[in-house]
Image (cartoon, rainbow, N blue to C red; front, top):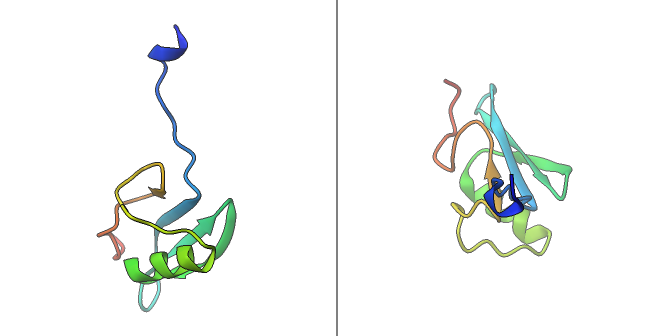
Length: 78
């Protein structure tokens, strides 16, 4: 297999993990591999990014944010 045929795997600075049970449910946010806090809404993810000097223009860009266990609209436990 050539390098051009191999799948591209991005390594975004922001990772938002799956929804955790709680009142209200939350998602853990990691930036540059370090857990930086909890997010209860997408605005919390943007605030955490801004605190680390990261400007997010597109929350759907996999090179910017990796959403684990859902997407930017997933904020409840299934």
